[in-house]
Length: 231
Image 1 (cartoon, rainbow, N blue to C red):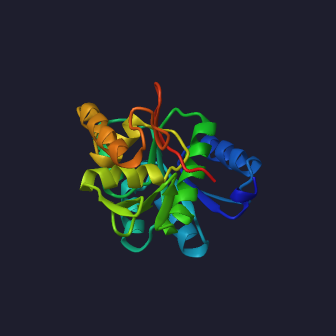
Image 2 (tube, rainbow, N blue to C red):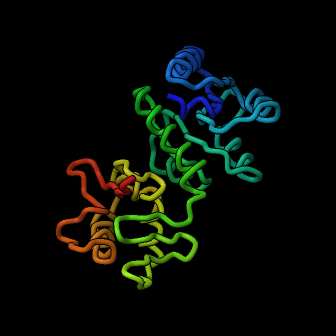
Image 3 (cartoon, rainbow, N blue to C red):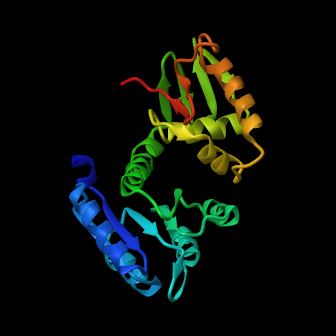
């Protein structure tokens, strides 16, 4: 895939077999520049000496926590970071997202799923984030103003509506699970499902010509939601 040729990835993990397998897998899938590091020291060296577009980061490393590297990087850079860890507790996930990780995937995992997430994060970090206005049918989502423009009128979004729509727009035309939305908006995947449903309903009232038959913000039964942008 030509899209992947333009990006470099650093995999940080102390499991030698995982490093080798992921290195070969990502190279086979079209990433020309894939680097590996087994600890924080090696990670810092690679980051200082190579241009890295995305880090796949384990949390349990022999010389410290991956959270330490995440916090260090975020002090100076918005480089894309996907946490890949055996730590599956809600507190670990919360700490990851609160420190601005772009995604969190729990081990054991399917390599293809990691690849999909890498593609999604790279697309939104390099392309969609620079797009201030997104055309959704006959509605324009103006991120810079936090409003919708429809039929020449400006429609105000609440803070939570904006966060939901902004997050979905970063994953345009892709299915986003309910858990991922909850974790990104409320930093928790429990107890907010009904709240999310209410916000989705209100958003559809502002986005759709017929909210009962949505074409822009659609439900993918059993999977989550998708914000549709036609090319």
